Image (cartoon, rainbow, N blue to C red; front, side, top):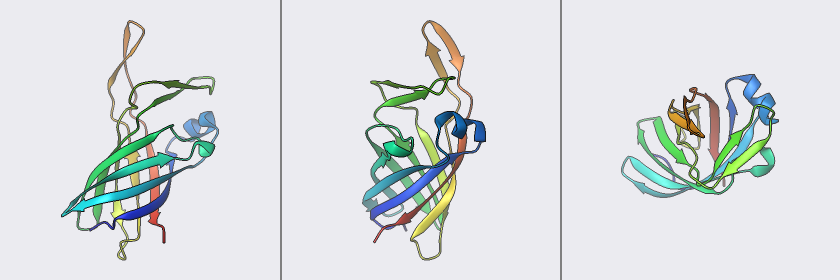
Amino acid sequence: MIQPGHWKGQYTFGNPAHNKLRGFELTTFYIDITSVDGHQFSGTVEDDLSTGGTEGIGEITGKVSGDFIEFVKQMPVKTVIEADGRRSTYNKKHRKLYYSGKMAADGKSISGSWRFRSELIWVGLVPHVSEPVGGTWSMALVG
């Protein structure tokens, strides 16, 4: 069972070239788990902009089975890192991020992997299949 409360975490991309392009090795985030109902949970997430995070307060929904956890992170603003490293922000939801991991025996820390699924995106009138991108993450209960 996951504990409600304030969690602080960090994520990184698995491909070092993505981190170099972003200008950040690690991005910090904060999750508030506000609802736990059996094995299901939900809450809010906010990335730290000073460490390369995405703008806005997003939502998470997930489930726990034993010490295995998975959740979906949905940010309200889409941020794209251009090939030259510039960040472009669009007024639409970011692609969903899928997190999974293993909870420590004391229930106060979790680590695992995250990923974007491949999807069809439009650049003007031209469709492109986005590459699957992912990395690792961890978080710990604060206080």
